[in-house]
Image 1 (cartoon, chains in turn cyan, red):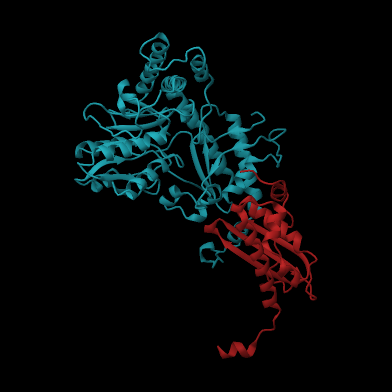
Image 2: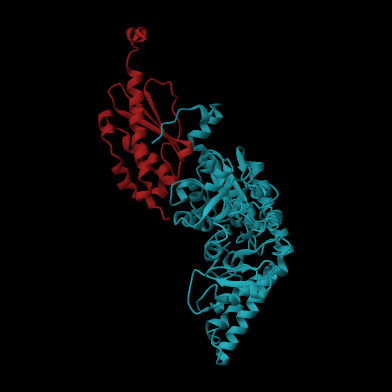
Length: 419
Length: 136
């Protein structure tokens, strides 16, 4: 706990692991060559570093190194997968299947394809925990379907989809399968062969690597996946993604993958224990709180809770500020988490993910996402639990809804005066 | 997003939090907003027979700016006549709290809240119209 506070928003981004930074450092200064320079040692050295990084990234997901295409991050990877497949296979079909809880990088890409009239998209519903039904995927596939895109783990609620089962369906039907695995890669075992994945998006900064570098896994064999590039130029990355390679980024990405791969089993267990400790403390001390997402099929570090009658942004404000000293530390550190409340989004709409689960808007407004990660400690969890309990109680004392609920008024029967 | 010092002050030390008995004939209660919109304000004004706001209370479900807007408005109304209270504009709240454009709806809700409270108080002060009730 330092002056900047406690970081528990590891789904947004993760801090760079100091070991990753150390690995990257030479590539900002002495080893500056262009990996595409074939005529001298500066280039050869950079290329060697890139290929070592590619190998490390590939190993984490049980892929072949040459199937890894480096991009600027998962958003670009999602764009390349969806737009690239739809464009390349336009003579085969124009139908894409995805789910309503996907990240905006997938959903908005799908909408762009629909708007341009080049694809027809089916948005599958999810169950009350946010999971996609593999049979639903099966039923949605038509002879026009070229791609199924289903995320591995959701960024808001941490729900993990039955990826291997969906992969089985797409294999059987001969349809390509893309998975945005940005949140799950490095946290949980992912095996593109065992899961039947043909394209997979990943991002270094969600796994203690640097920002601005990511990858798209593109299966080269059985089946061979073809893509139309969205960035044209010098023909880098098998022609799928032109542009001079981000050598320090790739080195850092590789190092981050290696750390995740070797430490995964221990880390998943440790982070899960912290998450469960936080959950138990909150549920033991507060009434009227609800877990969003799946109780079991969930990222180890994700806890998404609705604190009924307390609007999420007001709770964030309380946790962010250090204006309410309580007897935990001498100067309460601010806490960084996020909310599904409308007030924290640009659109003033509450979380579309929670809506898809059937969580009412009134509870979606009260949701908080805790994202635990590698560098969180038990001491931090205890502190966060105490601060959250304190703030929720304080804000409930301010809440007319809590007062009405405690008076036995059914809030759903009230005729609210809407703006 | 950064909050103004005044929003933080009202959020951290809200003024006049609480509830008056709703059936007190001197009390007007306004409840505005809706839970699914993320904002509900309950504003209560205690008004003397000569139409002066003696005291005010609020409870708010909403973001920090909504809490601050309702807290500030409870300070603003005290000692004012009913007519003066009806003249309060949301722009005064926006200015005092330096609310950004995305939070202007919080000030609008606070203005609506006090108007609803006054309307409620006026309604309560009217003698029960027995004849009118009979017509229905």
